[in-house]
Length: 328
Image (cartoon, rainbow, N blue to C red):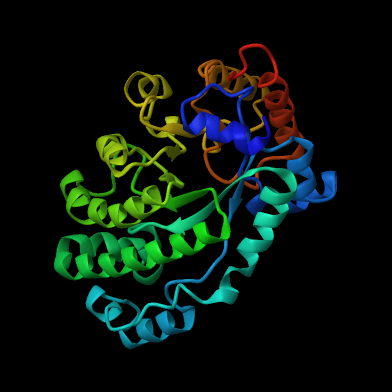
């Protein structure tokens, strides 16, 4: 199998020739990786990464427009004010050039599975509102937020369709809902405001026959059935350090979606505890001898991780997934 075929096998609940591997390493580790390997691209080639996480494209709001609106509001933007600000055009051709280049490098030249990050509903609007005010607005301005969210959902769908037209394999919706022990808002509110607006993009992506994944940090156990209903085929990271349980996933959700994750940046990598790091990598890979896991970090590896620890982790992962029973 080439990398792309291997990832698709996992998402479709078929047995791959080995477990696919990836890691969110670029954001904080680019300089030490470049010093050791030449570049992040060479690091990814060295460990034969099977996926690529693509960023880019247009933004729904211009930073300058938001700053002007914030100044008019005395430092805060309320939902009614944001509704007066037009969304940017998701169809600006030139805004997708970076995505095209990344697709050529990773998918065309290296055969990797390519997923592109697109906005969700809650997380992306923390930019205009700020997360504290946004949570307050959920209680104060539900009607106005419903319209803000609807507009965002329509923009998200257009962005996703444009990415699929370019040849992206999977739309990856980033929308943090979880705190450390549960949702940041009541599940009933999630069902009224978040769920129907996710469905707009989810239905369009699945109708195109493309793959669909979601990222949320934290504990989102309360809405996992809703994630299934929305049609998500991959969930990242299924964060065990926030009270989620991969063994519970295997019992209840394995047939519904695959997990991308397994290497926790909050508790496992970046702390200099090599024996614990090795045990955790071995445990997680050992849980998935038949597939259903895209091995990946739970988020961006943090800058307190040394290059020595990062290479120790990926040397081990590289070896384990190629052993009998190593996710195949």
